Length: 307
Ligand code: AMP
Ligand code: ZN
Image 1 (cartoon, rainbow, N blue to C red):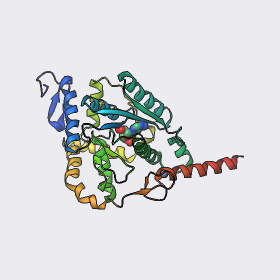
Image 2: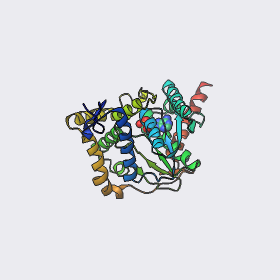
Image 3: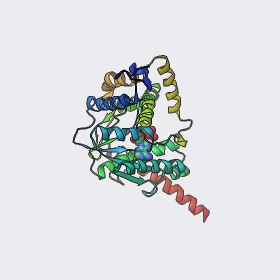
């Protein structure tokens, strides 16, 4: 197998691109693909300082590395979620990446902020992923706003976006579909733009990118994701991809180009403001403040019973 670019010995084959690469050609190929996604979707202006949400996994570390290589000014943001040893390893990995390269990383522990994921799941009946998603979204918005960043980038990849799209289509979640886009423009003065520069990059491609760039990342999946429906959707989409290479990319890109614009009117009202914290909210209290209030009430009741 020969490298499509230089004719040397190829080390990786990308069936959806009908191409094969040696490692020296693969790395710039992926970087250029991401650059194209950024410019095609108008995600980031060249002079904007980007806040990159880094979990310690392959996608967000590859994203951070790619944005730096493309010449963007970046700062990392890591949230210590409080999901046992998995979170400790994730934090250590994100910190090591930043330290080895002399990069700026904002490291925030949700426990220090008042509520971590383990406490949220211990005191409520909510699924861990739902509480975790609520807290992550809230702190991404809040920290980007408080620190004055115009844009926050996450490492959501093509597999994530295709699985989410399949889930939304299976239930015809029109409102969710209307908001599924690699660029979310702010709908409230306290939101900043959110972008997903890896939305055309597969999990496999970002893992290979990390391997070739010698980036250490946390390989294990979040323990809370075991059995999650999204994994079933990813599995089904991988079978489809094996039978028909390129179908994942086509599914997502054609949705964005053809169907998503037709759904924009279904996006619902713009959010109001949370009475407690002042962040955007669709009800009196935002989702995070409701979660905190529920946990506080249940914790107090439990402590009262114990005393
Ligand atoms: P997930 O929701 O775990 O699939 O992660 C999707 C994206 O959210 C990642 O690629 C990161 O950009 C971001 N993210 C997830 N967990 C964290 C974290 N603990 N700290 C910062 N960013 C995160
Ligand atoms: Zn609030």
